[in-house]
Image 1 (cartoon, helix red, strand yellow):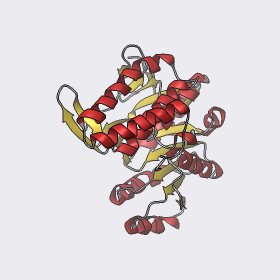
Image 2 (cartoon, rainbow, N blue to C red):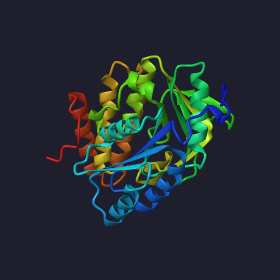
Image 3 (cartoon, rainbow, N blue to C red):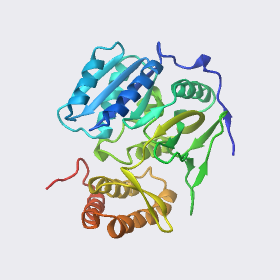
Image 4 (cartoon, one colour):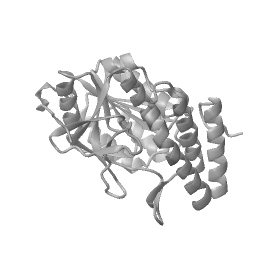
Length: 316
């Protein structure tokens, strides 16, 4: 596995300038969100929290408490913008705070105390010699403890890479949570695609960045916990499967098919992902309850993806 040494953090953006963060919330676990805010706030110069129309007294109390904190900006939406548009809104607030880079975070992630320092140092070092747009941490599933690899797309199988503590590995995409993006690169590549609403937002942006000549890196020394799926079920021959509800399955199917049609999506990824989509259709439509609701949502998602009908889930 090839690697690049991450330089000392002396050149990195520091909490006094440099890095701003965006957390998007929607009906969060309030205790987990409180832990995330406490963990990330000392690591960044500015924190924008964008809430997508959650209705919860405990959340109201938490966000009200932080609304007057120096360096924290709370934006409460009366409507659900979706993940992508909310990220874009938060990014603009970070840009207005005159930061150099933006850290994107999901509500159910927990960065290590030095994650931002490690990411920022690596980004500065990589950009000295490479056209690096973004870096991401090595993360573990908070439920299973399993470390997720960084991925290079291939056919018939992807290459799954684990960076050691001193290395950066090039990846073809980075997940949203923990992704640190240089704002000048984001300006050149463009914002998150709000039409997707949720799901595959990170993959679409990563593919677009790569198609425009930018590079993405995973940083082994930067650590984060992240929760995947609503729950896990063990199935014969398949092992642990992350379980999602029908609405989330709709977005997964719709946005996946829509990505297949985009000119900047790698054709090799389409070829090797299509069987995975079919397997997901079979698992959730035939094996995991509520099978009928799952199947109906997924088929509707496939149809809407083929038609290019995007935006929020159609409730009618």
